[in-house]
Image (cartoon, rainbow, N blue to C red; front, side, top):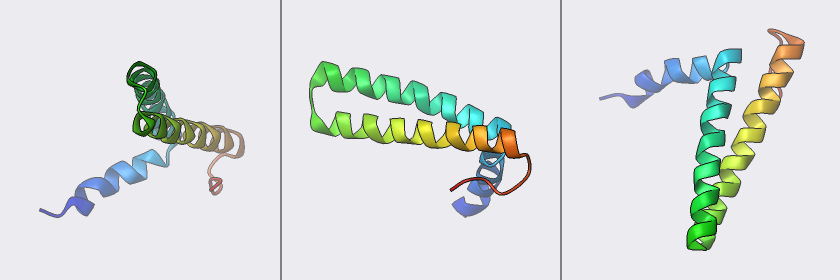
Length: 77
């Protein structure tokens, strides 16, 4: 099974305005859950995963805002 052929449509959709927003919201929920686990369990691994998820949230929402303002031009990296 070729996983790249399955993931390519998802990767293309992730670059759209709606895809960036949905990924941002899902990652926000994931970050909340991971932060809750980190506080509850106190493990550094949970904190690291929560921080990575928060970085992903900011990245997706900044790219969403950039694309909403600048339209179909190239998105910010």
